Image (cartoon, rainbow, N blue to C red; front, side, top):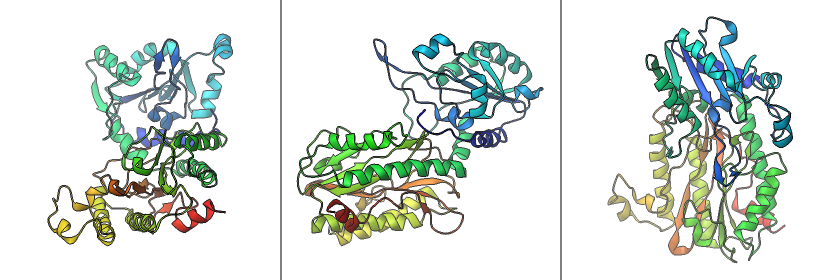
Length: 430
């Protein structure tokens, strides 16, 4: 891995939080992701399942974590199963985790090779009443591929039909959404790498540069700072492409006078950052572009102040909509009649700002979090309003990552990344 080793104390704490919520006499199992094939002998780069990483720090394929807090013997309470390494694997694939190294990473002392899993699980099932299965219940999830986790669940249900079943996901949704200080530090590191990439761009972007050249500059800066790369597929959208919310082709030439919407950010140690900035190709915003830009920035700043403990996500978005409505009226994009006659299910402002303002973030860019429950201190959210005007050939979105504080305004993890229009112009022309 490119990142520095994370102190295993984080994963010890995470496991304690999870097992504290388990029913008596229950087992929970977590599987790593598959390595997915492309064709022939080609595969996609391995990306670890975030849940097993969150609970163990193991960042390796063919790994399984078993938790059994009420096990009759101490060495059965936490068990890791790993792919057995050997000299052949070391030559062809590189070093895999040894048992000792796995303990250093995870803090788990009981480590077996994977071939022992079914035998040991069978023993655990004779002691246990309930199995926690790990299904993906994220509100944005649309999974069509059968995952390693899903195959295990199918197999387990057939093999152990007499046991009770519970779900890991509701526990994970709650505990993963509230970050430990170590996790916030890792997200901060991802944000700091993103800052380096963005500052690199401000002296690079000129008329006639291509979107993919900008992408190349970013990936260079990210990787040289120990990131695997982008936390999500980058959006580098010049001109009217900014009005396509998930534009990812990144293949157009950036024209003088246009804006570039950059929804790009680095990961670090599997933790995401999520930044959006909108910059002028020619180094100066037009008067109209700057007016819209400052309106978006005002909405972002006002929305950020609302991310406090006890706030409900749905009500928060209603209040942000009111602020956006005021700004759109000031820009002449909507009028009072539009507001008076609006459909409550799709308010007038939605014509120019059609997506949500904030989502949880952490190990996943759209991280775990139950939206019907009040916000809590140490949750991390994006704040990302935008105004999209196809008729004028540009769209503007601005996005920062903030930590909800017990008291006071949220802490902005992207506080050092330039965002004021005048500062961006100054840096682009220095």
